[in-house]
Image (cartoon, rainbow, N blue to C red; front, side):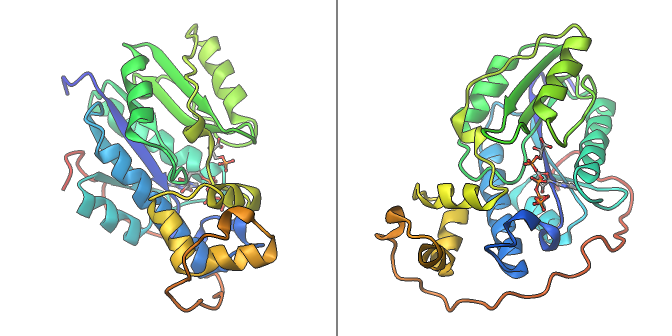
Length: 267
Ligand SMILES: Nc1nc2c(ncn2[C@@H]2O[C@H](COP(=O)(O)OP(=O)(O)OP(=O)(O)O)[C@@H](O)[C@H]2O)c(=O)[nH]1
Ligand SMILES: O=C(O)[C@H](O)COP(=O)(O)O
């Protein structure tokens, strides 16, 4: 590959297992639908960013893989299947880094699938400011010390250590390599939706995202209004769809099996 642009890597956990920390507010089906909507928002942004060389979605979820392929992204079947966090995320991103390095990609930009508010200008700030190898760019989560954007050139330069306190650990790993990471200030990249407070904050800023539309059209936003008086939600339109009863979550870490890794060219 002679392209000097970064490849976006979007790791996606099976929707049926996603957003467990939102269980106090949402049923299993609602969490899966929200994760799907957020992933579609993120996918649209990265695929519409010509500053990127391509988009690789790594997942063991057939539905996520089908969405990615329809949108024009390359899909890398995750092997082994998603494990409990953070091991699953770490192994998935390491797998993607190995594949991109083998394809001689200039670098990778890991974009989590739970950042529905990001915009193309945010991707451009990271990609166009990243520079040539060896380089690391990091963007931290606003609250929990996580890493919400990780770019590295070459793709397998940086030890991947998602999990508790990951931003500090990724920063330290980069410094240990003698690479001072670039840390652009990107507030929208800081706002991943993990916990109830993140969901309330997201709802208080109406947007044209699929995630916001799902939460309002399904009646969830109004239900949360009744749970916690949110002045910002008063002007929401009446919900159009009947509310779905919470469903039981399936066994989330049953074994998935996939074939060989997909080619990088989008199918
Ligand atoms: N491919 C893959 N992606 C993962 C895995 N675990 C998490 N992710 C993705 O990594 C990003 C951040 O993950 P989390 O914030 O832990 O999201 P989550 O696992 O849905 O949230 P919880 O269920 O509350 O832990 C999201 O895009 C997830 O879909 C995994 O095991 N495999
Ligand atoms: O930094 C990390 O480990 C990932 O971004 C996931 O963290 P989160 O579950 O807190 O979003």
